Length: 69
Image 1 (cartoon, rainbow, N blue to C red):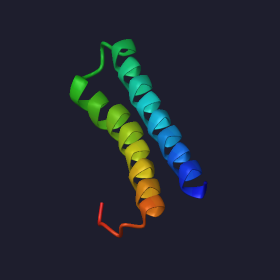
Image 2: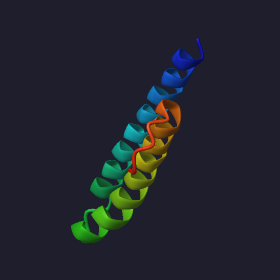
Image 3: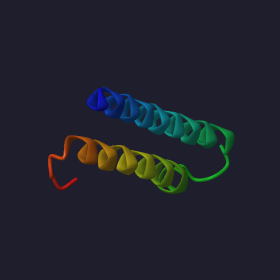
Image 4: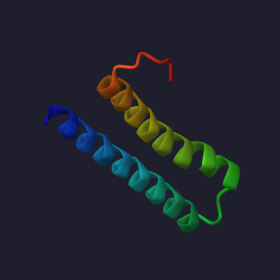
């Protein structure tokens, strides 16, 4: 039962991470006048990287696999 709850939490985090990346992409299209490189680095880089790191750290904690992400 506990593993099932952990997996549900993991998928929730994955969904949240995907949503953050979609929001970041929408931000890019809203700011057409800024340089694409700068936007990718700041908007997508910060939001998606943070979300993905949270996801990977949670996955590592749940599976306790001890891999270096």
